[in-house]
Image (cartoon, rainbow over all chains, first blue to last red; front, side):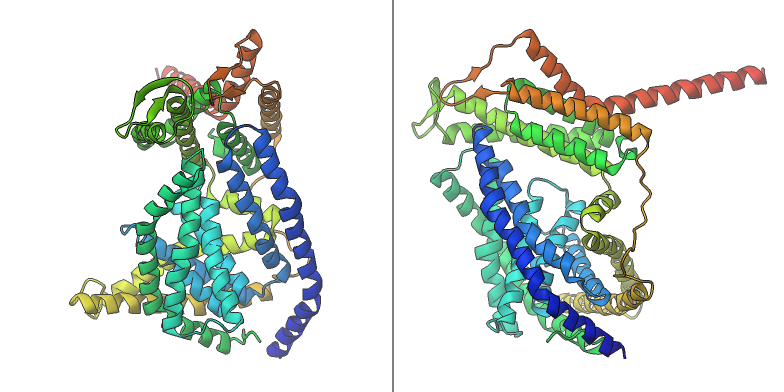
Length: 251
Length: 302
């Protein structure tokens, strides 16, 4: 009986899904075509070198469509709490490894969430974990950047998995984790450093910041690969079992 | 009466305005006001820890200025050469100080935010915009301490059977730690599924569900918000009248300081110290009251 009810809800969501997607696309288009150029223009008007402020605002805008999906999708209570548990584990993991700088399991858990519950859940888990863990580590101008970087890692994992390009196997996951941290998460966080620290963005400045970021990103990538190696299979087994047991299977 | 006893929206408006102004206004006087106010307020809120944090930022400002001045070379006033023969200019040196102080001021304001805006206030503010996300955040924030506690209990039990994270050789310890994580995950998940079912039974996702909050907007908040808006308007007026305008490249050009400028400086300073002044006034008032009470008591005893 319960299963039937859930299915009814599922089809309901699917029917209205198309309409909601267009609304989100509209908002995204509005943000990209109107708000972001306006912000850049205002930033230029405000005077010299407000990169730091403008970049932070743009990152915040970029996250709005992702959060809108979550708000409109009417997530089921069970799905909501399971994602919350994964976020909590990611945050607790970051807090447990507080003594090892940059060696954190956060991205690994976010990737696992993306694989298990799809790209949007992955983005949500990454962004919210970044935000909440900064209640422990300290909020700052880096918070939106971390939220966006971790979120994108989860989103990419979920989308590539849904497309069938990323298998639920240990090896592809580890490779994906390492690559995503080195090429996406790390450079995004370096960009934050670049905009925060240097008020003049030049090619040399950028080169210095990105080069300086490589060792840090390598540690981060190695940590992600190790944690994916250790955690991915048991965690995915657990999540699949939970999904099967409580009929949270996605089609 | 600390600033955190005000309505969360007021905390949010105040800190957003102050931090945005700190970042946008590059005028040395405005920056100095913001830096001094942030310094004083974070020491007031965080005590000795805040003081040492603020002091530790100063070497970073110096280091940053040095790096900045030796890598950027705009400006017309030459004051020296770096080791590789590039010139150091007064303009880039001063601009380095300005950006360093800005970053330090933002960090100190952030320390104040950390001390006054608790996570439940964030959840409340989010709840107005996106109720689902706010519910999610509140579940999450409650889960983290619960997970820590659960991990501690499991760890105690496993130590008793010789499977603690500090028992056995290195490999064994790692295996024990992974197993601990596994137990915590399974237990928490199964437990939270129950919570989810209970949420559903109590009408989660039904229309018209409202959220509980302990905040209300009273007259004290109203008067504060009027004051705050007036101050923000004054700061923006100063901005519109080019009072905050300053050029660093190629030469430092500051608008001439007129009597009106002092008015704007005063208004901006007042905005920056508003919460701290109210807290100090309130503390002074309470102290006076309790002294009076104490005197009355002593006299009656005699």
